[in-house]
Image (cartoon, rainbow, N blue to C red; front, side, top):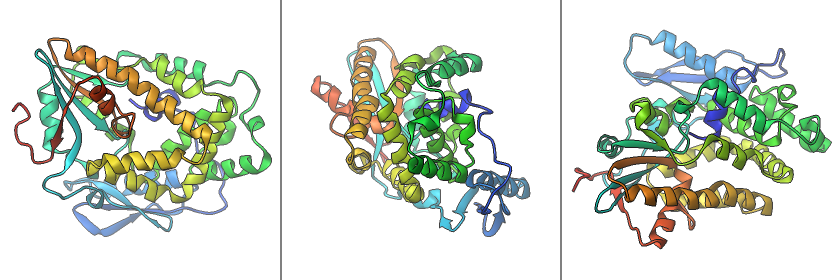
Length: 368
């Protein structure tokens, strides 16, 4: 479970559409069974509203067809389809490793926390690893918490404590840029005034992907969670710890991350497509570079990356070592970013003398 997805639950009802708009927005969706027929959202007040309207029109018009609806355009921006993002190489590495001890097997999978229907089905090796495992392990098991618990914990962590309003943290120019991007994606900043900058960052990131057709309910961990009984789902971290990593960052760091996110929105489609393409092709080198490049130009951003990835990787790797010393099998799902780069969980385990086997798309029997 990612920060963005748990915040989708916790902040339900916070985001709303504005009552007026200066420039209309339009999204186009098509159905996989008839790609030459376009379904337009019509004029909408923001890109998220346009995306949802186009998908709804497509689904209603094609209710009797098998297949799926997919966004192909956001205003004048072409959206890369899932078919073009998925690799067609018959043998390619997956974001999936197998670790074995004398008593246990751990399958370690890298997830993208938001995907779209056109990315599915996943390679059969993910399915096989899941079926071979006694336990499903997530970053955080939110199925063990009620929506009211998630909401209360998030509110407590995300609310401002040292100032009255979010806007007090920004100069006029930066706040204007933030407001423009927020309006473009249907996020009323007035509703976020009592929250820390990290809340605005997560909401912007989430809505940016939603406008491109990505859905947190279609992320890899969401896909597998619904197929496992609650008593067989474990977690690597607690919700309190994840919230602390996000909302307890220094204010200057939160502002730097937020404004960097604002700056990246001009290229959000290509950035999202590059990320998904690297994951789908098992290219951890490119994924690591995409992440490193994102944070390279600021010391504050590098510190944020170290907290959000490197520090958590160390704790997660220790948990995985514990699983290998048990008598059960595990399917562990973490964000793919945790499995790429110099300080990845893969390298940390290797440093402990624990070497895994990379699974490939043409591997037939994972038990061999």
